[in-house]
Each structure stands twice: as structure tokens, then as C-alpha cells.
Image (cartoon, each protein chain N blue to C red):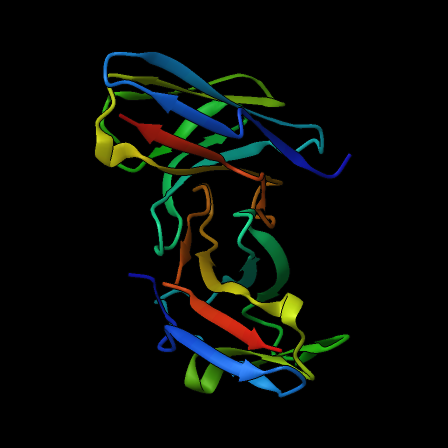
Length: 117
Length: 111
């Protein structure tokens, strides 16, 4: 069965510090997608990134970067030079891709990130 | 148009009321989802519609009744809810095996 573990429940850092959010996943499938979503206090889930299981290239988008390592089943997310606006709950999620079956996306429990001014 | 809209934003209802949540997207997505999110918890999948047919029901109680009138619209009909059903209800849509994009949610309070 699929499982996503975000061991850090809550993290607080001072503005401009770098912070890494951990995500470890379990799946029996060889084909799957991994996601990160941001949920600010307003409640809307904002899509950040999707990675498929065959693409282990790390990705950088501005201050955000992602490190995908299949060997350790991890998909970690780093914010560089954090800002107060980065304060939110961040969810890592996993979906298995199975022929002729609709995808189910399973979320981790989320990490609540506080950026202190 | 690259967004999912949900109405109403907030809803307060009594346990004997009947109400509906509405979700709309115009991105040509053929998969639509309802998720329920309790405070300080992750979203939990309730239903998936694929090509306007219900394809996944995660053993949701019958007091929640989904409906997909067409490829752009998804409704969730509510009847005889309990206070523990109070939550944020999120709608999402995607292409098949694509990335789900979420709406802003409806905050439901059941008195």
C-alpha cells in the first residue's frame, strides 16, 4: 500500500534561513508520481511540483528546490532564503499510476512551516 | 481559464438541512475529485469522477451524494449531516493521470 511520511510536524526558522522539508514514501509500484503542495492559511492547496518515478533529476525553481532519491524513497523540498510569505502547511503526496484505474493521490500529514520575521 | 472555482466559500447548516456544494472548471479536465479536510489533518479523498462517471467512492456515508452533471461541473449534495462532518471540502480536477489542481474549498459548519 502507498504511504507518505512527513516526520516534521512543525518547523520554525528565522527569515532568510534555509529550510528543508522531508518526505519519505512507500509504494510497491514502479510507476508513480510525487507532488508537493502548499496550503497557506486561506486554505487553498497550491501545486508546487510533480515528479514521475523515472525522473530523478533535481529541480530548482527560484528559491525552491527538490531532491528526489529513489534509493532512499525520499523527495525532499528546500526553501532557500526563506520569507515570511513561505509560512504555510506543506504536503507531500504520492499517486500510483495503474492502467485502467483512476489515480488516487495520498497525502502525507503535512509540515507546518513558520517563518519568523 | 486555469482555475477551479467552488461555491459557496462558507456554509453553515443544521443537521436536518439539505444543501449542495458546487465545483466548476473550464480546463478540459476529465477527472474531478472531492476531498475532505479536517483541521490540522491532510486532505482525504472522498470521490473521483472520470469522464463523468463515478470511479472511486472511498466508503463515504450516503449522506454525501456526488453528482457530475457534465464535464465541467461537480456537485456534492449534503443531507442529514452530523457536526463531525464540519470540515473544509476541496474540489480538484485533472487530466487523466495528470496533476490535480484544487479549488479554494468550502468551509462547512454543521450545527
